[in-house]
Image (tube, rainbow, N blue to C red):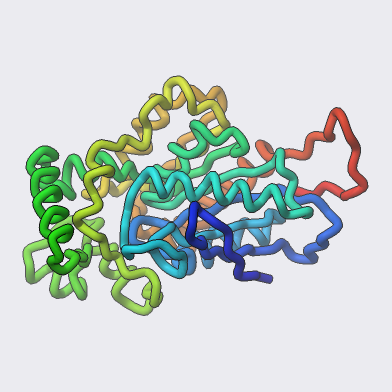
Length: 323
């Protein structure tokens, strides 16, 4: 069972789907998981329809949302990918979950896929209502901009972004970049060899993963914040929640393999586990049954263990706890 809902981030609505466990009962209290989609994606791609559904089937209430300025969520102009606002979406998701009578506010976790993984980690550092963190092929969007997305010239990238923003402020048309080639064949003809770019195209530009709101577009002039942002900043001090990091061992240009190793080294979390899906790549972990099963076979027990029911010390509730 699934329900479409909205909650506020500042002055606009964030669109989300709630996935419910089998035999859901509003009188019970459930552990909840916020599920965050990849960069340029939407809640109907992997975060909701694959991982969200599976976690709900395992007994959790799952909130899969569209990032602000993207998908079905509000915010103008469209296709902004601002890490600060992306992280704020998680706080607003927590605000919404704690108003639901069937959600146990002490048992909220987060799962992020690709860029959503980096945002999940960053959000958890300062959002203490998040009690457990899982990532699947999580990537640090700031590092990507300082490296591949910015042609390994972050200062040059910032200069170009500034020029474009000035032009748009003076009335020129907004520059919205399509982040992927129209097809794998077109990408190969253009000389692209990187496994992540080609496999992303196979996922997002074919019926395999194509969705109306998963457009992989970026408003170029609003990327300066990302260049100066680091998903893992202060992880040695502030990231203390139980952490599970799932990566494939076929690395590509988006760098999730190295990011996974880095956050495992840097996280202050006493409980942390690295899961490597051997023989699988970044985009295999989005939807292919075998690697997804590897991830879920670890993530489901991880969340069950770390989002266990703990009776309230100061007040009792008649609501029955589950999961």
